Amino acid sequence: QVQLVESGGGLVQVGGSLRLSCAASGRTFSGYVMGWFRQAPGKERDFVAAILWNSGSTRYADSVKGRFTISRDNAKNTVYLQMNSLKPEDTAVYYCAATQDTTGWYVRLSAYEYDNWGQGTQVTVSS
Image 1: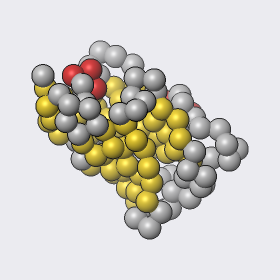
Image 2: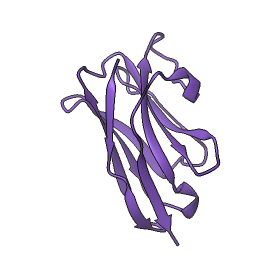
Image 3: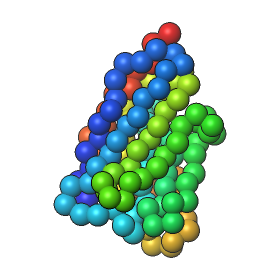
Image 4: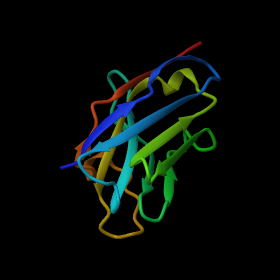
């Protein structure tokens, strides 16, 4: 079991930026797929971005392409989500997720494919 701790959420104006962090407790992320998801009130938990820790391969939801960047820091065992040009529709609770990378190439996009979750961090974009 991997324990995930998110940080970096907050209140930002439209067009602003935030960087979310997700750190692992107890083990390294090597060999894992790391994902960011978000959930707005009354809505499903949606895929935002994911990265294969070993290869660095990434995938993004169409709604965030060109604005968000997922990255990882091996030395800090931390995955980041840099969010730029934020819009009101980006307002949600953002969750970090992890699951073992069993293929080396498949970047998992569904929340059902992840079995470790952080507690979530609120991002609010005001207009």
